[in-house]
Image (cartoon, rainbow, N blue to C red; front, side, top):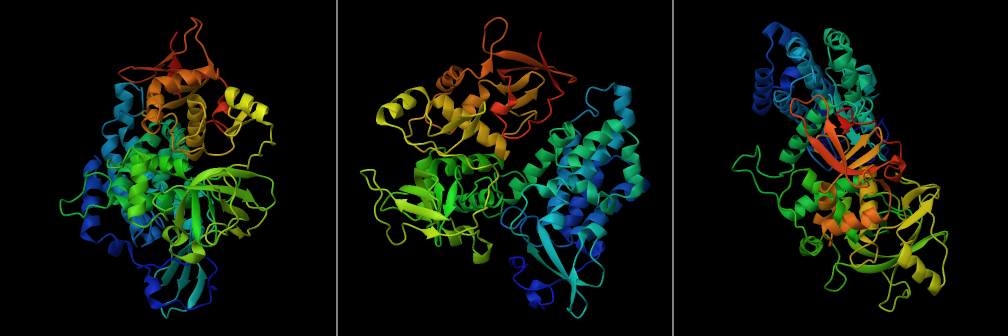
Length: 573
């Protein structure tokens, strides 16, 4: 099994232990296991093309892909993390995407004659897009050291130059820290190593398919339109099947994965991918020498949403039940008989301080390999007494540790609001919860996460949840199932579906949340004075109506530049 080491732990001139080393195999050997031969046959059955063209266009690409990824894993701690995981995942997504493609008339909205003429080219776009959707991982997320037949170091594998040399060996590790999402954007730079030249030329002949295909390989699935939707769905199914989500595609004898394992795997993934940022103002958690302290409600809500998106159906809807499961299996360190710790987090420079309800997780449960953990938090994490004042630092309850002063997260830290008098605080609480949001240059920025029992207005809670979900990618945009669509007039949030999504994980009724959100007056009313705007689909054989609230200024919801407008929606006149 490939053991994962911190990059730079040993120099490239070191001779690695033999169980860390794997030989470079031929494509024939890599594709020979029965499970992969079955997938190959299913892929060929889904492609209606002559055997000669299949061999030239499809089989060549599959063999190039196998030779390129060898037995590398698809992830470190998430799906398909075993040796050979990337090859298995690539074949599974390809087979799934081709099956989903059969239910689509491509190109969208075209005449029947055009659809028939272009069918094979669109099938090839789906096939290559699916096969290559994670091809950037070996290039930017992993480091591979090559060795000769005597297992003497040869240097690093430069994946941009092509596959690993035959008759050699390799040892891999994961790059830390990672550039999140970078692997999704480098696909076009590696395409010529996987797709045969005749296949690339064939795709490039038709700009109608080539443009969304390039967007897909560049990681812009929204601009890829239906291609992005197909690959996203196939990818999700493969991930869910590998992680034991639901029963689809599982053998009757397959071991049921316990709930606590699903929760721990999901938590590790959210932290490793930066969806739960650490060690800064506005973060989801802070790490000391022994424990990781996580904002309770934010963490569990994000964990539940992530597992639901992966297809898990057995996730409790109540936070206290999830706390119980994590405590029962010693993932959480309890505070007496409870999971929640009331703590004060203060940065080392004294520029900000927050009182929060936190969960305490032993750092070894998140990072089994100690060197994989980030540097500890530069500041203090202090127990708060029931009277609301901070107790003196107690062993194991307060940490003062150092990290680089220049550390940043995915979003810039927000400033802490200055202290106010009791009268000013009461006024602020009535009009606006300044502890949760900061108004700056016309934009709303999350300042700190709140937890069960907070006093923040339901509409403001919804806004914070929506902005956080859009920033992390947990709330999808412009998809057929999306609750949020970018339109030429602004951003359409589908009502009441999106409010029901929020209500499902909060203690509010959805109609109350919608009313409180409308009180914020961020949306535009229709010319008739009503709140709900109507949009209809374009190009679909069966038209449908989408109703929602229209936010004219996308910067109110998106921290960065908003995606391009959904080309399949138009405002109903």
